[in-house]
Length: 485
View 1 (spheres, rainbow, N blue to C red):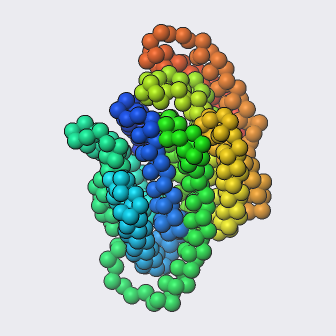
View 2: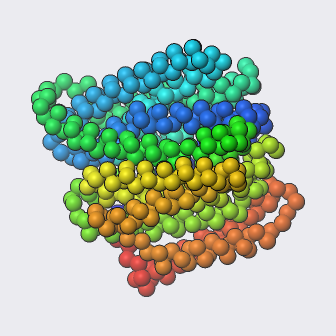
View 3: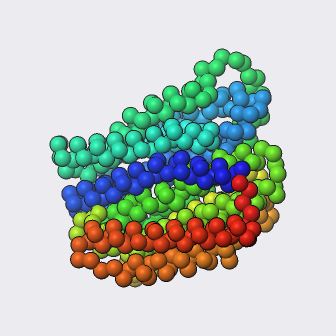
């Protein structure tokens, strides 16, 4: 039943990704017509700084909180889990406040002109850190409804607040950061109420401290190695912004960031099947420690993911240029060339999330950390070599190469844990269908860019979905694949 549940969960979580995709489009459409690439570059750099900070503060705690939820919820140690969550909350709050106060003091002495950016960025760090700590509980508990509401309404309010501040008060780039801070504050409180209903944070039962310490060591052991993993992943995600700024300046960062953010909404469609649908199911399966079933489950999920992601890759290649022309200001839309390699990278990256799950489940996250650190180092070296010569487009291809390197290493190492089996040959027809669909759809040439985009996207979607689903039925009919539905 796991494949059927996986597919149902994908559709359950899809609205939480489709609406942010629309919001991402509107955000780019509005603000790249108000701010210059230089101003937008400053915004991109601030967001590139706050992301890794939130990761360092939170992920060491958030990862075991999500990872062990199902296991502890169905065991005799539920109270231990709750007490550990309380303790982690205190540590995250204290760490966030220390970082923010230090940043403000540093800004008062050395960067007075940037205080309007530092203060909202600090508030954003505090509440994003707390939200990041609790959010993994929602997919872990199969609460797709609450997760959807958080993802959708927070993005909507962020856009509304930003538009109000920019249009009604002043077109200052700091207001985009204030919008992120205020939306994170507003939606933290509904989130904490939802979590309280799931786990009684006010539980008065007494748990011996030595029992808590015994379990908390397990959480720390898992979490701290994952913290370094997430920090390295953040460097892979945003490190190129700093290299571009160093060699090319803030204008190029702004162009790159605008196109990256525009296509990042598409990445949500890719990540939803993995982080939201697959992971909770895998955690449930792991409770029984049936490795053969785990190998089969991950193999089937990878195959389904390939069907989705290959279509997204083809669609991105097809509509990148008209999408950028429609969505971005004239100074920004020349950066559409980065969209295709970015999506390629995001696809192999999300696939690796399935591949390294065996290492997570066996709590051997140190090997993942080593591999991603290697990929991050390669990313940095290649960026320094190629960005000065080929510009920001090189950064996008380097990001893809780094993600691909990590994925290959994970695939190779997985045989020592829970083997990641990939049906490459069964995926080739998807690639062929996508290429033919792009070739046919690309023959459409219409002067009106809006009609051109809709026509190309519609034709490609129909062609790809129809033939791919037909291919899946053939595989099922002749028992070439044997999904456990």
